[in-house]
Amino acid sequence: MFGGRLRCIRQHVRAPRGWHRIDDADRPSRTPAKTLAALSAAHHAGPAIGVVCDHIHEHEGVGGVRRILGVLALAKKHGPAVAEDAAKPPSISASPPITSSAAIWSAGRR
Image (cartoon, rainbow, N blue to C red; front, side):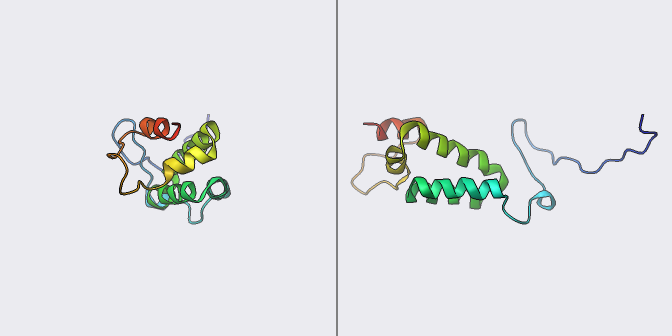
């Protein structure tokens, strides 16, 4: 069909099953517009939500965009006030740390 003209352009970096790895050469040099829009929406939803999403973007880059969208979806589902309270760091007099995200959201709904 192609007459032998096909060649391998890029190979995916090996990763354990279910993981994603992106080679540094394949990462975008500038932040995509949709990612910037998601970060802007996070800051609009609340300052603590914006800080959490900035942290995700800074440490995970392209792979963290889905997590940012998940945070925004939780803010939409439960309301920005609940999401803002859940995103704030715990106070010193707070109860023991909550380890699961489901527990964080249920604690914020009380």
